[in-house]
Amino acid sequence: MQNFNVSDANRLSGLFVSKGMLSEEAGTVAHALLDIRESMERIYGELLPAILNGPEVEKSILEEHLWEIREEFRHVDYHIHDAGFAHAHFDGTI
Image (cartoon, rainbow, N blue to C red; front, side, top):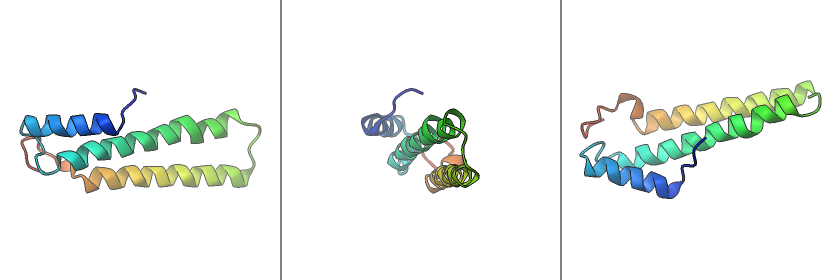
C-alpha cells in the first residue's frame, strides 16, 4: 500500500480546493482518507497476519481479533459518512 500521510492529506485538500471541488469539506475528506488508510493498514497489515501467521490461535484470541477488525470497519464507515464522501458531487457540493 502506498504511503499516505498528514502532509499528503493536506496537499490533497489544497488540490481539491484549487480545483473548486469539495471546497468546505476538502480537509475533512482528505483526512478521512488518511484515517481510512490507517484502518486498512491495521486490518491487513497487523490483525489478519496475527491470525493467519501466528501459532495456532485460541478461540478467545480469534474472537478478540475479529472484534478489532469489526471496530476498524466501523471506524472506516464513520469516516465515509462523516466526510460526506459517499454523497460527494465533486463540484464543490456535498
